[in-house]
Structures are given as structure tokens and as C-alpha cells.
Length: 128
Image (cartoon, rainbow, N blue to C red; front, top):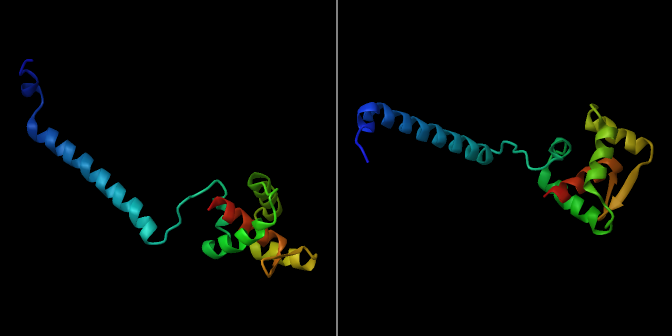
């Protein structure tokens, strides 16, 4: 092997570039981990656009698990499609109010819930 490469590559710029790359990697890793520690939302599933409508993900998973106990035919993909179509760009509170007014209420695990809310909770439980 020849020592010609030493004359072409200067040590200081090479070490500076390697240090900068390591620093960028460290800053990126810290930022990624900090987002979880600070409670910032991380995209966890393909249904995150729907699940993020729920005020408390952990409670929604609890309710959704109860809803799924008796429903072995639940298909998350179809439910998500129906929920996206039903909710659209409207506020969730409006959709839940419509469910209540039109009698679209379900009982699951001792809770009496609007149909849309129960579906969102079931989707959260499937995605967990």
C-alpha cells in the first residue's frame, strides 16, 4: 500500500468533517428521543389521523379493548375507511352529537357511547 493518500487528504479537515457528522447524528438522536420524553406525538400507526382525535389514547385503548372482546369480525382497515368518510373534516364533537341525536349509541363494557367514539376506541386498541 502506498502513502500517497496522506498527501491528498489533510488530517484536520477530515477530523472536522467526521466530528460534524457525529455531532449531527447525536443531535438528531437526542431530538428524536426528547420528542417521546416531552410527550410529543409520534406517528405510531396508519390510523394516527383518526386516533389523534381522541383526548386520551390510553383510556381509548381500554374502552376499545372492551369493545373488541365481543367483536371478532372487526376489521381495522374497513373501520378506518368508514370513520374517515363519516368524520371528514368536521369536528369530532359535531359527529358525536349527531350520533347521539340519531340514536347511534352502543353499549360496551358498561359504557354507553356514540357509535363513532366506540369505533375510534376500537381502532386505537387494534393499533396499540
